[in-house]
Length: 347
Image (cartoon, rainbow, N blue to C red; front, side, top):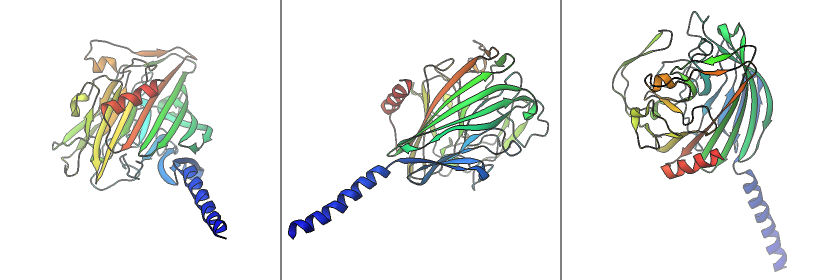
């Protein structure tokens, strides 16, 4: 009788242990077509969403919002989920995205519904979902889009296929973006400009502290005035492999860049890692203290102060692939950690 009782108690314990292990870091992709998004959930908790509304709302698909393993949002809310105290500049800076300021003369980066004359702006239109597959610790989402000039009413310059790979492991969340761009019926030139290419706009708390008002001007001379803001709780600082820190990282080159800060009591690190196969590796960094964190390998003339010029081109039907890894850590990371992550990504 004693043995029977022991057996009865041991079997449920074994079953419970197996169940919890199988659920750990389980990633699900949930389609919400009516809301124009695919949610990425880790153990039932939102990690991010692939957001693809009509171009009357947003001029490109994005990942928005993005959260840490603790459920803290690291992306700015404006203009879709504004939060008290955050900046309301650059309405085209939404979540995480990839586009460029000058593609055959059309500006895909700065396009937004806030602009009146959008005839020289481009629009990236979501066209389909090829794959949506969840799993334990890893999930894949493959989508397609068209880069169309004249505010989405003209020619299709580029066909895009993007594979997002989402990873979850303990206190880290990782997003790999692998984007293939294929020129269509004409040569496509990416002129050397500063606004590009792979970017994230971070929450106010992760900005670099600044007590000065500023005016930001885009490529078409449109000004956005930003008033002096309260720096209470503003903790962000950039750091690169050469130990350059703060706003001084702008226009530097490197295989990775890390943005560290704190939201409430949570230490947070956001690292973007370049891939050795990318054009003009290692990338230039278009990283600004006000919360824009971007890798731009194609703006060489701007970042080199006219010493070099790239003007990257694709012949008709030619393709190019851009690969970027973003690592969001709830906690602190070292240079050694980031070098290992970069090496792993390179493989």
